[in-house]
Image (tube, rainbow, N blue to C red; front, side):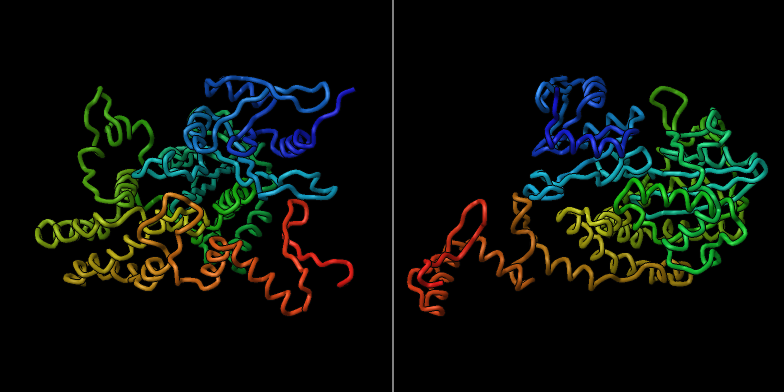
Length: 479
């Protein structure tokens, strides 16, 4: 008879909930995989497949990677079409009792797929990483797409014949389809295909998802009141993020509805023939490579969107040309603007990471530096308010936020990620805890003396052991 260890039982319980994904199970400084996942990971990552005893007469296949190299290995697994569930340690010490079984608490914190990547090292800085949802009733189709790293979220409804070209224009990394969708076998669908249960695309369910997410009573503010299929696609996309990510859906704070009639439709064949993003020749230039003189990642992504969506409205085209003409004519102002942009990092992705609670201290400081450069940008644009009035109105001065970051975070970050990030004096409570950490023995000795004086028990002692932690000990006669 064979019995398995509590650790392996914990793994199996979590794996049962994520059977369609590779489960990376955090154990100390490693992400471990077992059983079939281990065989798959060993093959895909070209690492050693070994085994581990997991109970009496039980030995299971094992393959693992160090936690600090997760990003590199995720890149390989995602590029080969795998879903990866990240299972983290949620407690620093074992949980006692029958429910805890003496194990460190663990659970999946997110499921990584091609359309939900948030790791900066796995993303192209000047290209969006879109997740799209698509549904069709045969005559009309609904499309929604989002970039969880920038907060961009849009939806449209159009004729079914125009839907696949529109998806090709968006070029999502991943497309969500209902399980019953007839388009699953279509060669024209771009990106990695993920099937969702039909109920997520049902209008009533999707509508409730949208209303709950945006805290609104109707679809009118979202521009989807007459577009039930677009609403179905947008609701399904949010449901997918809610089920696979812990915080990514929170970055989608606005939904833009749009009409495809406002720009020229360019399908994949047209984009290739015109060499807009890639040259047909070896090493030759594309239109994008010739035009892209953008100073920021945000500008690079906007240029890509403009090239994928050539305008048809003459007034908008003329407005864009006037902006360009002014900057060409005003060489000194243009140089000043470019100099200011050099200090602006990727505000879209930085703010999304801060909102999701996953930004590092270095990223928060980069956000502050970017916000501090905004007044310089505004100063240039204010010299021509007639042309740039709308841009100025949408470009707030975030002086208070930048000052708060500078006040809170040390300008010279320590090598250790655990201490020294928050400046001394910013938080009295933190300073007190930091002092306790640095002079814990002194504090306990002083506490012992205070308690002896307060109680009059000269034999009172403050002690510590691994079972009870810190405790106060008195002799029986003093009880």
